[in-house]
Image (cartoon, rainbow, N blue to C red; front, side, top):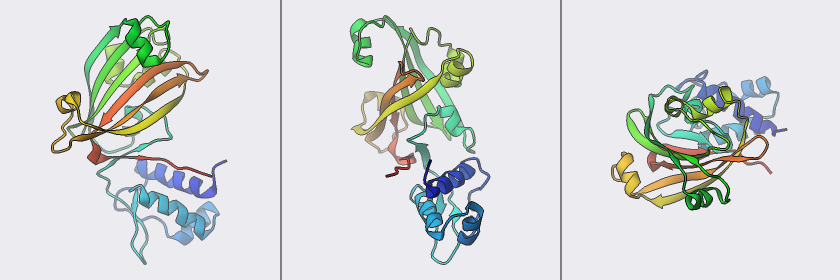
Length: 235
């Protein structure tokens, strides 16, 4: 079970992301939060400290904390969610553009992607994500056709995970993720509105079904100025 301060942090974060607490709105006083969650003042301050470090709230000495007006886009690193799910409760304009959807059948390339032989075909999907009109994410995904035999264009424009779970009955379990910072390459300059930036934040990894079968390799390339990848680590 999560520590008490993590429970308080998670509940307040969810209320902010769902806009139950709106930008500029004051949070309850520490004493009220102590009573509401039945925790100590130290526990409340730990939770508020995490929220402040992640840009969810603003605190000033002698004043109650307020919900921050966030320009950055927070991606919870410990959560496996689609782009559509991450943006479902946020008041911002988003758009997905499908640049490429094709079937690859090269054995060497497939083995290179998934680290194993035997897969005959994979879907190669390239999408550009716009937030507030700006092209800020490149999502490049590969899906094993032995697990994902069909991948319609409509699902790629909307939500692949929603399609796989609701229409194909796939049970998505977990993912491994790796973050790196790389020099912007030709594909980044072509598809992202980089401006003066010459670096991109790259999140890559594998996604598995609930029974441990890898079905997706993904590489997401992010313009660096708008994003914060956050999580809570416990000892």
